[in-house]
Image (cartoon, rainbow, N blue to C red; front, side, top):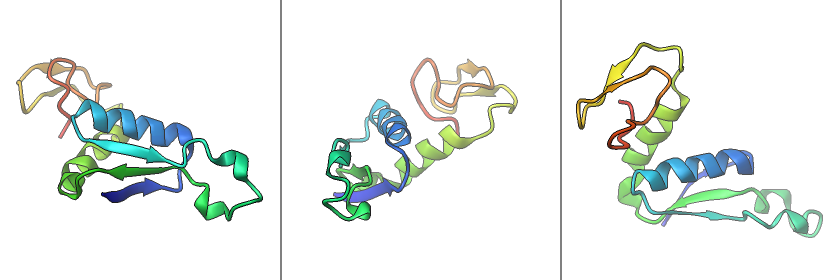
Length: 101
């Protein structure tokens, strides 16, 4: 297991988790509900963290998150996996769920 992301809001961690699990990348969120211990534990121990189950998924996971961050004002694109045309605002193929690359 490898820590993939931390230091962002719980909302962002959940978005990352959803994007990765949609792509079949097994991962877990840690410290999701620990904010109630604020003051009892150091702040750095209370950050939500996203962990990848398999370290081998790191490169693909980075690609998935990069596709989420791309500018939505880009041009329409065609999926590299299933060759289905996509509108510019989509970062994942609506047909096969492959990331925009």
